[in-house]
Image (cartoon, rainbow, N blue to C red; front, side):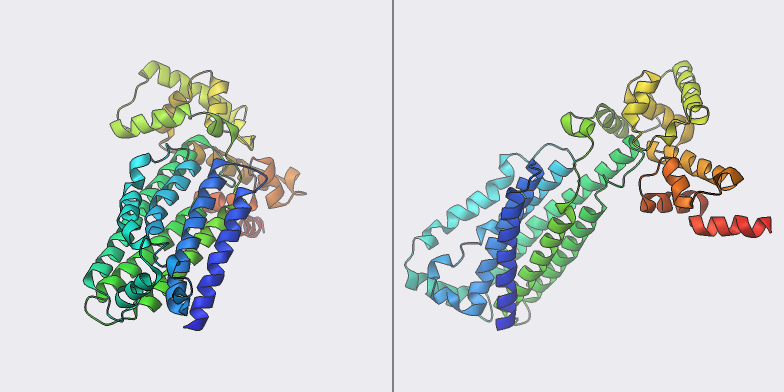
Length: 382
């Protein structure tokens, strides 16, 4: 028990220290501030279970339940952070109503004397069989966080699709790590709900359970913080203003992709020009190519280019460009002129910015790894 309290106490201070680092990070951004606030509230709320498990609540009785209402900020703060990452509108004030109401209900408790707080803690919070009301409150708080995480996951999923429709390289833009951590959050929350429901039927040590769940939350949120620490700022065009194409894509998604706006003649004309850019000018060789840059080449709004791609190729901008890149790489691998270059060198010349993105795209469009493809070609020549 003592070891668990030490671990959680260390995790709490680690979180506070990490929050300070994020506040003072050289590359100042609203995302860092949002993440710092999220880490801070989780770190401070972790001190509550530590006080109960270590027995220090008797030394510092006025800290009892000080972190209780902060749990209701987990969801809104996490959601705000994901909104900033995905360039969505930030949550409005009413998201914080549960926190405000719960904090208001605890004011009479905060005004009690030290002895009264200790007595309450030992009777209600440290009881080996916590009351149904306590378990209900814990369950509601967990469900509250659960809802926000599901919404956050949906935002990351939509944003990833938006990136596929607007960018040809996602090595510096995707939110896969954030999505993975959010999914782990879901697993921990499901476990917490199962445990809290089980407490209705079996006697479980509430303090130990609370500390274990708190530790799980700490590990997850710190993992999210560290994986996001070096996450680069998105391309300038997406940061400075709402993306015209993304707004139109959302509108088209609501209507359904079978409903297109462009007349047949205009669509066919743009399709011919797009084909020329791809097959003759090989515009896909530009490593930083985006939908907006392609729209400038064609002289039409980005959403029209997106519609043409959808109608003519039935794929995203990302897949269209990378499929052409892979075909060019295959041509060069079959050309002795490029024998002095490595596979990765050819990939970089063809527009890829990283080995991982190249390998992923190559496997997707050929069904084999680059080395397997090269070996197959070598065996065929023999």
